Image (cartoon, rainbow, N blue to C red):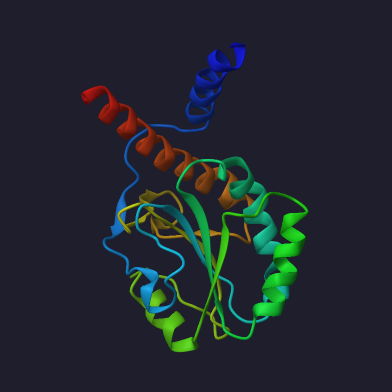
Length: 202
């Protein structure tokens, strides 16, 4: 019985800590395409998704994946409808499997989902995000993106460093700690509050 009373308090403290000037996280790109052109096994719709592009030479991007795993995945992965979707070129299956094995030593990785695609598919999908960022020649970017349950790309319109902030740099622990963590808290709290309101209105 004690646990039942403690959990709401923990949840409140979790969402309250580090989230300043709570409000909706701005929508930067509406109606991001579903993944059906690449896979039918994973959906963006009805999920809060952290979307990334590892590109070729996955083994060289392990540091980025580990940063993301420690700073964002581990604190939030138990929330319902929350997932990581990483798009990777075909041919990187063995490298991804090795990465998954290493990540599995650090956390339950069931919500890390890897999608394999052709070069044209990856470029097309990335372009329709309509960001001010570019893929590298190996089809990677250190930036990851927050996609809401309605497939809208969320970010910041008044970031103190870049103005409009479409993605978060996994090479920068400071970016993950000081910005992405807060923004993920905001979007999770946003849906949590909407759910409570819907339940109260019934």
